[in-house]
Image 1 (spheres, rainbow, N blue to C red):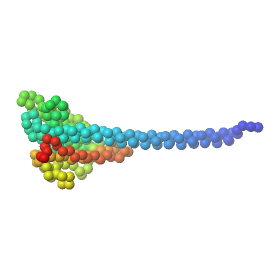
Image 2 (image 1 turned 30 degrees about the vertical axis):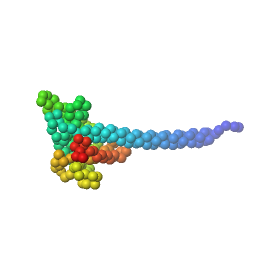
Image 3 (image 1 turned 120 degrees about the vertical axis):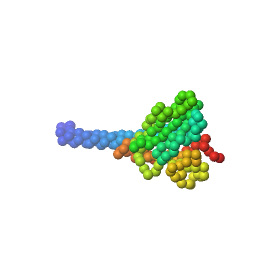
Amino acid sequence: MSGFTVIELVVVIGLWALVGLIVFFVAWNLSDTGQYVQNKLANQNDLEQVFANMVIEIRSTAPSVFGGYPIVTAGTSSLTFFSDVSNDGVSDEVRYFAGTSTISRGVIVATGTPSSYPTSSEVITTVISNLITTSTPLFQYFDAQYTGTQSPMTQPVTVADIRAVLVTILVDVNPGTAPLPVFFSRMVTMRNLRSN
């Protein structure tokens, strides 16, 4: 007699089931790894875009519409300055500030005659979520003597002395899970405040 016995069929089906389970778990782990890489890249790209915009705005500080100094306030967790972020040829008041776990951006467009910046018209948007608070300030300021090795100015700073800003953040795109938090830091020289 030729053919398979019931025992041989059970063994073959069992082996195929085992191979199927192994393939399933390997594919599942590869999917998790792909998701990890995708989240990491998405987080990096989002931060790069936010920082590119922030750097352009800070670098392009300019006097207010009535000739006010380009920097309004400069603290460790907030920075308010004038820059033409609406691209209409008129300086807007821009404020970046840290909340509990966010960085927000407020913009006030100059209105009226004579022009003014009414705080009631400030439009606030959250630009970064899942901010991790660290001992490093969000904003650190440097004067005209900064060559790359000096310590930042001590708070409270005199805004007229500021020539560069170091922006430093740590963000966790998925708190408690992979990918790990992303550290980002950028030194920005204010173009219209250079003394050289």
